[in-house]
Amino acid sequence: MRIAMISEHASPLAVLGGEDAGGQNTHVAELSAALAAAGHEVRVYTRRDAPDLPVTVRSPDGYDVVHVPAGPAEPVAKDALLPHMREFSRWLIERWRGDWVPEVIHAHFWMSGLAGLTAGRQTGVPVVQTYHALGTVKRRYQGVQDTSPARRVSYERELGRSVDRIVAQCRDEVGELVRMGVPRSRMTVVPSGVNLATFAPLGPAADREPGLARILTVGRLVERKGFQTVIRAMALVPDAECLVVGGPPEGLLETDPYARRLRALAESCGVADRVHLVGAVPREEMGRWYRSADLLVAAPWYEPFGLTPLEAMACGVPVVGTAVGGIRDTVLDGTTGDLVPARDPQALATAIQGLLDDRIRRFAYAAAARERARARYSWAATAERLVEVYSEVAAVRRPTRVVA
Image 1 (cartoon, rainbow, N blue to C red):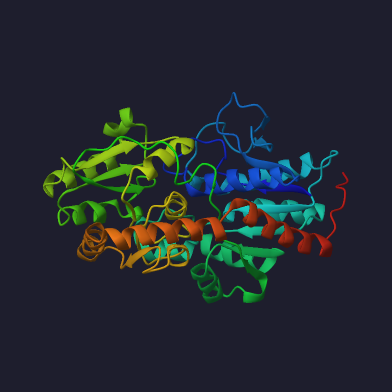
Image 2: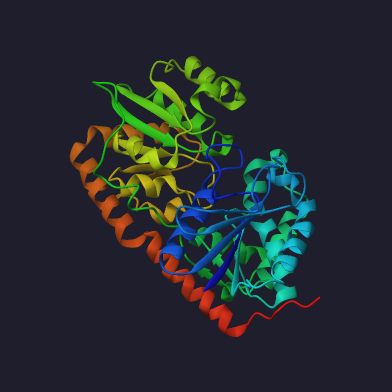
């Protein structure tokens, strides 16, 4: 099939760890690679954010990344991109007047959905929508700190009622959409996958401090990821170190306000000698860090899906996570890891220490985690399921040529 991925702010070529570069970038990159490997023709459309970017870049994984000139050719926060989506959609319509017209559009994030739906209506191409995050959830947990455009929730609701199919990533998202008024019949649950070649139990591991258990926590350095809860829990977990992977490169951590807050918190909790900020790590090197750990801690306040628990599980590392969002689906409580309430340092510390103290249970979790990741969450399986969805919607709506 000819598949157009739209990911307006999250380029699959971006360096991960920044404010707006994380799980969606990885999802789009890995999904596109899996689809290309299965023989499909994939083009990812993302906004041009630098003047020297070529229009089209061929990924080593066999898909094209197309840089759309919508708005200034410079970095723009994703919450400020809405005014440029009309220009984005017009460029797509004009582009698809040529020889390459997609058979299906898969939009990632709600603003991509607006651009994709406009272009799809003009070209007769069906639209599949993945939200990656919902405005209702963000508003619930961030309150006045939520910088989303005022009409985000209403746009997301209308998208849910207008696109040809919604691909939800977990059960929690389905319930949220139903409460928003989106019909359940329009949804299909297809979870994200994990790269089983990059993330595997065997391979090199990062060096570690002798005599200390290692706890790893990974993600963008933003408050909702729960790193403060992890640091507070570390005060109750002696004989262990905690590595925080993510954010800007190590040399730039001092310039990051949140990184400075985390270091100050570690100092005030008396764990500064056992909590280390690693900074950004290239995705292809993350396996070394997972394999070096005794367990992964994922403690977000909310999480639309959460790729890092899956990556750790594929490496044979058990997970202590908060019982939120997609983590409730991927981590089997008491089988592949332990789940605790969000923002509860005491409960988190108890779960961490309990697992560190029980070597047999930790090894059993590790084996079960590895098996679950391999059996249920390969990107090849995710791509295969999505092609079924694409074929279903394409059979109903055949694309037509755009005429002037």
